[in-house]
Amino acid sequence: MEIDKSKLFEAIQQLEKSELIALLDRTFTKMDGATQRNTFGPLFKQHTKKERTPEKLLADIEAFYKKSVDGYYYAPFDVNSKNFSDIPEETDEWFDEIADYLDFASELVEEKQYAMGLKCLNLLMELIDKMESGEEIVFADELGSWMLSTEEDYIEKYILVVSKEVSSVDEYVELLIPRIKSDSFFSFYDKVYQKVKKHANAEQLKAIKAAVKQQNIRVK
Image 1 (cartoon, rainbow, N blue to C red):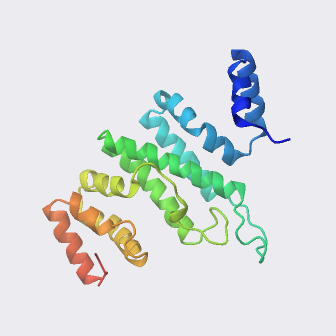
Image 2: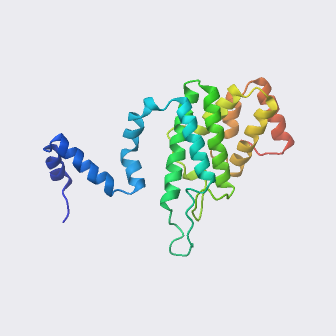
Image 3: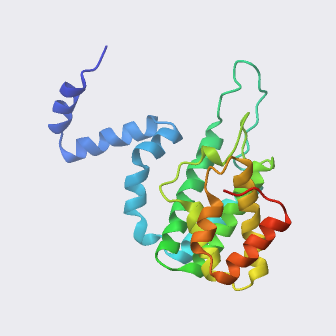
């Protein structure tokens, strides 16, 4: 039977609150994880925002990091010509979770909570690097940060917080040169070098330019 959306919503509008909650409960239970997150994720994140203190966020990210490197989200299967485009539920879940954490950590940077923002983003960026380098974090025929769907520009927030919080110029260069190299490899998709120049102070910029020249990194 084909369901007419307008008539369905007429019926829904006539439901009592308890009936509507019961309907939502049954609907939620029958959804797969990806559909649950896509449908109810924004409401859940908004409702739990007050509970997400910087300290709790860091603890949650540390737990997520450990689960990731321990293989919790790694669900391999034998790839063939028919299933090569399939994405395991665990892989979808990992990308959804890390995207949320990147957004939450980016909000800390926006609020100028630089120390905690840097701790959170360093862990998340390290996880992304592990995933892209082929470590057994998640499984799919093709993987990359291009699969991330975030609301915040976490790359720029990371560059900003590194420029504000890292006191050592050597450490600053050590953290950001790999980002510039990676962006160069991927045709400057994230405009990393431009964002570095935007947020660097004079000393940081001089050191970055020197490293770029010394390592012969293409920039744009």
